[in-house]
Every structure is written in C-alpha cells, then in structure tokens.
Amino acid sequence: MRILFLLLASILAYSKTITATYSAKYGWFGTIATAKGIYERNETDYKITTIVKTKGFAASISGNLIQTYISTGKVINNKLVPKYYIVDIKRNRNDFYRIYIFDHKNKIVTKKRFKNGKLTKEYRYFYAPDDILTLYWNLPLYTKEKKQNYTFYAVGGSKKNGRVDISFLNDKELKKLKKVFKSKGIYIKANLYNKVFAGDKGILYLVIDPKSWVTLEGMVKNVLKIGNLKGKINSLKIK
Image 1: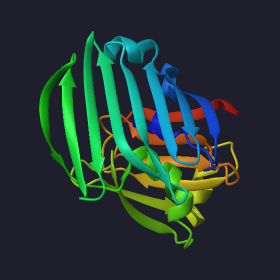
Image 2: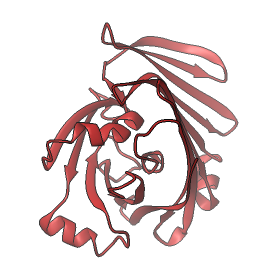
Image 3: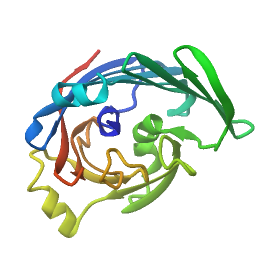
C-alpha cells in the first residue's frame, strides 16, 4: 500500500489545509484500497496524515488492514523537516505501531516498536534527513538542477539505508507510460528498494501536476505477477 500514501502531495505554501482522496485498483479485482490524506501547514509547522483502508478481497485476505502514516515537524527555509514519523498498522484486531524520532543536530533516528500499546523494542535506526512523505513534498526544492536522475535518503525507503532513487522520465519509457496514464503532467519513477507487494521491485511510476505538485495517477507494475496496481486521485480540496 506504500503507493497510496505517496499519491498525496501538494505545492509548499503557507497556512494551507489540503484534503485528498485516492483509490487503487488491482487487475481484475477492481478497487482494493482507498486512501485519505490531510496536509496542514503554517509558517513554522506541518502535519501530514494519511489513512489507507483495504477493500473487498484485499480486506478479507489482509485481516481488514488499515494503515495510518503521520509525519510532523518544522518548516525551515520552506523545507519540511520531520520530527516524528509514525506508521500504525491495524489488522486481525492487532495494532502494530512504529514511531521514528529524529534528532537532526546529532544525526540520530530512534525507532520504537509497539504491539497493542506495549513497547516491544527500542533501538537506534539509520539517520536520514527526511521521511518518505517529506521527501516527496520537498522534491521541488531538491530537484532545481533539472537533472534526470537523483538519489536521496529517507526513512521509509530502503530498509538498509533509506535510499530512494528518483528519475524524471523521457524518451522510450515516457512514451510507453503515456499510453497507460490518462493525465498530463511530469512523469517520474521512484525506486524505494522495498517491495510494495510480493513479486514487484518497489518501483513506482507517478504523474504529477507541475503547477500544484499534486500526484494525479500512479502505478506499481507486475504485482504478484498477475497485474498492475494503479492508483488515481478522486478528489482534492484546498483551504
């Protein structure tokens, strides 16, 4: 379900609340998940909340999986700087809660794991300046050089070191994807080095509105070797 929370993005601006909804379809199974994201920001602070819910057959085989992703922190020089990144996974009446605490001054991230409200493990995680949500929304600041390929590091990327590769597509690959997506915009490929589902390689394809930096469509190819997972925006409200 990682693709769904990555499908929530907006232009960085003062005092905004953005609410977006998405749906994801998988092969002949139809809609298997929906997502709702809320982005709140003022001049000094931000909060991103994304809730992903499985539907239909996906809910039945996953124990009614619900995933919540939260990133909170400061806005410094127009950049989102995370203080806490939370992953809360509910399934089969169990609650698996993970919190990553950032100490940017000392370049330390501490990870705490909870099960049903009880702390099960606490340890030092690898340091990265972003989590996967802030990395995406900081991309307009990070990609001003207009290169085709970039490498970043974020909690939520590779489990080994947080690596995430971003490519702005052109030529043959771009031509192929334009036959798949209906939206116009900037086409990017993100390699998270983490599988979204069994059978894929953790590679996402996204179409982004260049004016608002809102993702319009996305796809993970060859999930479980029987079909592509495709997501698209359903609604967007900005206050």
